[in-house]
Image (tube, rainbow, N blue to C red; front, side, top):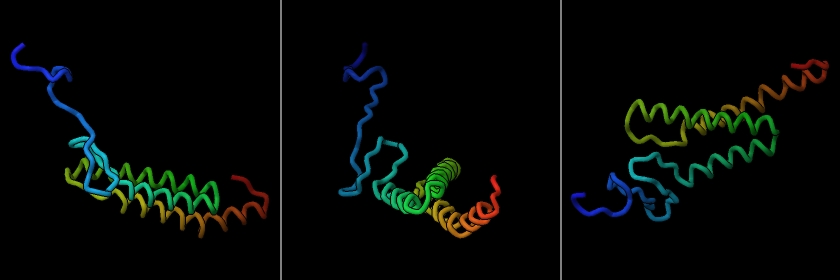
Length: 118
């Protein structure tokens, strides 16, 4: 062939993990989606708090956070610029948590009192 090869295959493009700013806890590939360690901490605190209350609330908050991440990824593809990962996910998770505690709990208690099932 023409030219030297680095042994990585035909494209010559190297993929390697790069560390983000000092102490940020981010590791990413070039031109990839990045999710920092702080994001995971906020998500886990919300889901952990919901788990202290009820298993249904925990799963509802978990799925709300995942839906918020999907919405963020869709907006990322639409706007083609960096977006924060927390606002949509945490807002959806908090609304689900509060809604579950304020509206769903009394409904379920009333239904169990009157022996009604879903």
